[in-house]
Image (cartoon, rainbow over all chains, first blue to last red; front, side):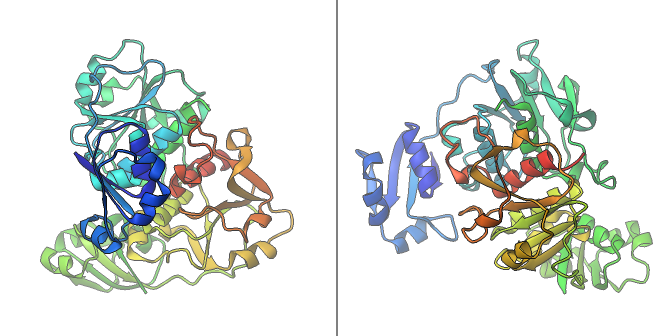
Length: 229
Length: 229
């Protein structure tokens, strides 16, 4: 089970057909969302009660307890679409923003290293703004995943000495590998990269500094450059 | 005065020539940063003491008290470079990430609406990862700024019904206007936009939803598309 809060998150999950274990909402929210919540296990609560059960400092009008989705087989990487692989992302806000951005660019699968923060952590769910209801997020061993991937599927990895991303056209398929906030892509995954890419900096002082772009920002720029629009 | 924490932030500020009121650092940090901190007002502290004065849950090895920089005249917008204007950004992490991204793309000036979160808020400083030492951030009345700007300087504003950003080449100059996380660009600033732009979404369900990209992610994609590299 996991918790989702806020009207956008909760209604997007309900629309996705997820199993709703419990809904706790104010009367006001229930009135404006009647058509979405038929037959759901709803408990009306006051704003004061919601504040007590919420993980947010400013609780919204609804909190849902939902069943964790059953994910596909790990080896089932799409070859009809770009896919993300996240190596040791530790900040919940970054993971949530990456899931949200992936959804915007039509990416349907995200593979996370086992030490990446849990996608169903309440802070991650909050930052996805409903996108977690549409994107499949699978925690797995990325080394195994890359070893068993379809042979011709490219792996794009953002490093310091790669080809400028500005030279690339949108891709049919492939895996975009994003490294951790503090250390970039880990040494054991570097050999699997088939295409090294770099986001050029105008600022010469920064161009040899891995920490100079936030991980979710680097991911957004790479998705923008490589995804079809 | 404001507080900066962490080795990258503090050394980047010291290198920028800012006035250092006080430095509180561990002996270990002092030993490895000797050449940067000559004549600075340094107090050696233990990790335990640093924890007591830090705003971070995991304090690093140094905390600095610095003088707020004296900013230029508000009307002094660069016409040799792109500039950012931020309308009602409320999340400190978003503002910090926007400053960090601007620095990467060579943007040197950011104008913030008066109700945008303070750029010297400790959480913003932290998220800039040193970039605040290189980018000038000015809180001002954006309406006045736009009224008094050089006549031919374009204002690019991200809205729902704009030209796809994919059609644009890097620009010589201009102002990129970024709206708030919850409400986009405010009604009173919309008339000043000279070029409406849109980040196309692959996902048809989302393309009419303003909230579907994080503000710092939208900013990063627009900077990538419009800044020279």
